[in-house]
Figure 1 (tube, rainbow, N blue to C red):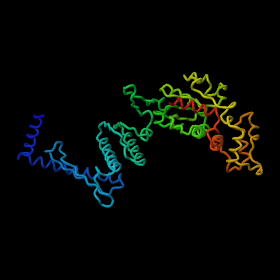
Figure 2: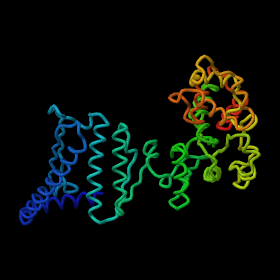
Figure 3: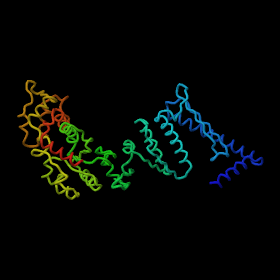
Figure 4: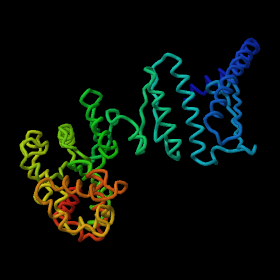
Length: 403
């Protein structure tokens, strides 16, 4: 350290010597002129990106007697009223947006150099509102389009994590006093396909990483109605219990996705209609689940009396829901009666009562399909006791599995 200090003193003495002074000062002036031009470009970029400031002035000073040649950079920022702003004392969001604009310019500068560049961001969207978080994501995606640029982000931000492809997410967590690195999908064709399946059923990256239980349900009817019924029965939202549901729509891809989740130590179950147990061709038949490495006895809950979820609700409940949401138009003096629904307990109950209600009510108020009809029923129920006991038991089991 003493040697470096001594040489630094000697270095400064040489710079001040008469035989070098003229040349050094000329070079300093030339460099400063170039930096002033660069600073003006940065200033214009900041002004374009940060709309709630009035003006920015950047004044670099070059001196080879300083440690790195750039002696100082004076920055003056004013608001739209012309008042000076101290960025260190200003709101964190504004300071971060100014920094964001500078990062954007710096990334462009580095990329144009032709060298390989690695940009490291540490919690870059802290203090940014949603609008500016989206701008940040757009900036990062733009940076990654340059094949010379690699971006690495350390973040807890759900928006940032959800805003990228699952194959680009590396989950770092602590487990048994050790740091564990987990990737749910890679950049292979299989990883991309699984990521596409997750996106198609509305499962965000943060859900895939953090939820404690994944529940595959029959289709759109269950995906829309079960959250309503769960809230009524338990007083809590599915998300607050760490439960994520997704509609499988009798799709083979859903079973592959469940197999993928299960292989990555995610807790997976299905909540499907009873008739899938006896239909060998059904995607959730016991044999097909076993072939996927899943245990139908532990990982599949069946609903229906005897075949589908719509049948577990009483005729009286259906009649009350229909009178509330889809009053009869074919016979205005009549209301829907329990017997109207009981008459369809043979055959395909859900399809038959949908046809009956759509035929009997005004077209403007008729349910658009089975999902709309089941949600209408769910919203008509008033107390937790109105939720069928079998369904309440299934909800309790899901909550226990998610703990």
